[in-house]
Image (cartoon, rainbow, N blue to C red):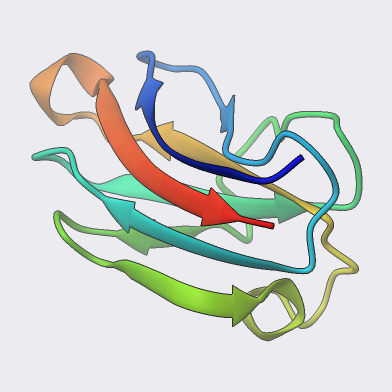
Length: 97
């Protein structure tokens, strides 16, 4: 299911940015602290930051294929984890088809 929205990130919890399997994604870190972005091969949330990408405030990607972000993984879902500052919360703008 397509979406174009902001998603809040709770402290210490991987949060799904995708609500269905996707092949590309647009996102931007709209929180004041950094976030981690990680692709997965299914709907199960990650358990570590191994292989995750770090994005600082206002950084993101525009309509990037998941195969370009995570070339060593057949990613179909994307998750985000807030960094440690500001109590570990955050927000991400996300859009995907």
